[in-house]
Image (cartoon, rainbow over all chains, first blue to last red; front, side):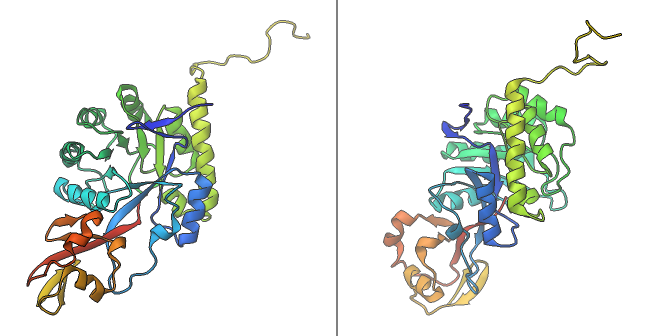
Length: 256
Length: 69
């Protein structure tokens, strides 16, 4: 079935984006990306450790295979996010940016006003902007109006694995959005990923739930199947929920 | 003279160039993004910047892509 994810005119076959943070080893990370059959993988921008340079993550990521989606994690203001985005682009791997403006370390909730400001600036500078946002449909619409290539609402707190707080709000964003909706943050298990896709999300982004699972590559595969199942179910069209039972076997010809 | 690299003070000989600093720090400039006093130096134009002389108080950031979500 030809069912492509299209972001700013670029086509992708897999709707599971995977983060590269928090893995115990580089090997677990690369095996997880492979098991997820990820095409888009996120990375962060950080100061190089000059005293102990260590291994570069990029040595473990096949750039012919994966599209790098750098993020602005660490930015607490729009200004910092713009600076990080420019640094990320200068690495020469991608003009896509997963925009995060996060002032509060306890909740890691996004500053949606700062996110909107930074979106406007980065869109003007030619970035393909994928902003991380709350599950507020009004903000999602404003981000889209500002030129965001997708909107990435949270299911719940980053890294919490709590699943959906209120799926109806994500549905509302999906219903109104003209750009792909990527559910980012808070997904814990494949059923969460499947639910996102059943609601009509275009993709999901998962990091912690894979990286911190007991067996990350196995969880990556499970998440891949969850995303696929959910997407197929969405395309197939679910039945309406009924108040009462509806028998599956014929009512006629019952042996009495 | 004193310059600031990645937020930390460093003593380097006066007259050190941008290219010289990379050698001093044993950093391959193709593997980092260099921000010099808030100006990003694009890799494609790196050669044009190697002989730029640093001066007291200059601030550099040497960043790279790392694991993240």
